[in-house]
Length: 200
Image (cartoon, rainbow, N blue to C red):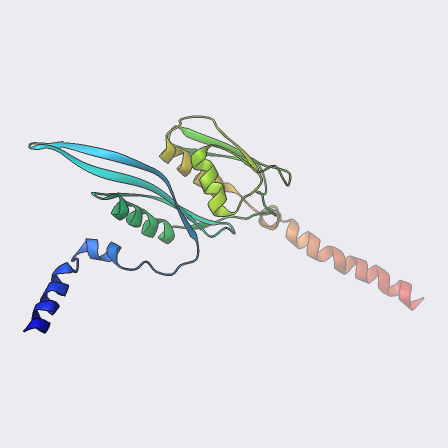
C-alpha cells in the first residue's frame, strides 16, 4: 500500500497541460539566453486586478545567430521560458566581419529607430542597455549604435533585429550587382595571355 500511495503522490506533483511543457527540461541547444526586460502587467476584472509578467528575452550563439521574443505568464519563470522557446524557433543569421558588422544601417520598428555603424578593433560596444545585450548575444564586439526614436525597450530591441536583417555580406552584394561573373571570368583572361608568353 505504501508503494501505491507514493506513486499517487508523485502523479499529483506532475504538472499537466501547457504548463508542463515549459516546466520540462529545456532542450540542449547552443546559445546563451539573456533576459533584457521584465515588466509587471495588470488586468482589471470584476473582482479586482489580475497581475502577470512580461519578459523580453534574447538568445544568441555568438557567431551571428540571434533571436528575440516576448513571453507573458502569471509567473516570471514561465514568461521567460515562453519567450526563450519562441526566440529559439525564430532565430535569424546575419553576416559578421571580424568582430563587427559589415556596413552602416538603420533599423526601424514602430516609433523606434536604431542606427549602427562598424567600428575599429578595440572600440567595444557603444550602445544602450537593451541593444548592447543583443550585440553581445550575437557576438559583435566592436560597433557604434544610437537610438533615434522611442526609448521603449521592446521596440528598440526589435528595431535592432530589423537592422540585422538588412545586413549583407560583400559576396551577396556582388552577386546582386552581377559582378560575381565578371570576377570569375577575369582570371581566365589572364591565363590566356600568359600561355603564349610561356610558348615563346
